[in-house]
Length: 106
Image (cartoon, rainbow, N blue to C red):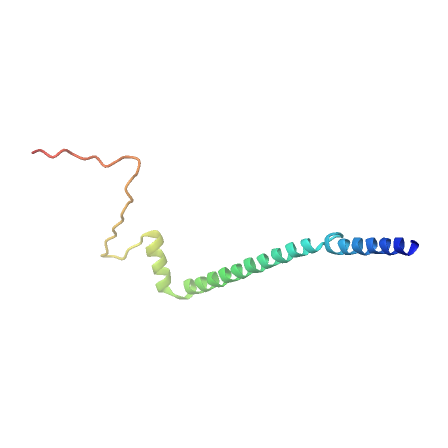
């Protein structure tokens, strides 16, 4: 009978130790999985920021050394034109007021 109680107590200790290893302590298995997902997300964000930084460096280099790039930006963003050119700007129709229609005389 004592042997059976001892084995039962030993089994409870082993189950408790296994439970503590998997789900208890400072970092459980679930916490570690969450940290792994967070780490993977951080790596993806870092990769996208590296890509963005590289593209901005290339754009800065082109703006420093390429006059055609500077002219293109000036034309697109600021509406600059050369002498003798005409600039046409189109405005989106306003949605606040419907266009007025004039009746046609018959």
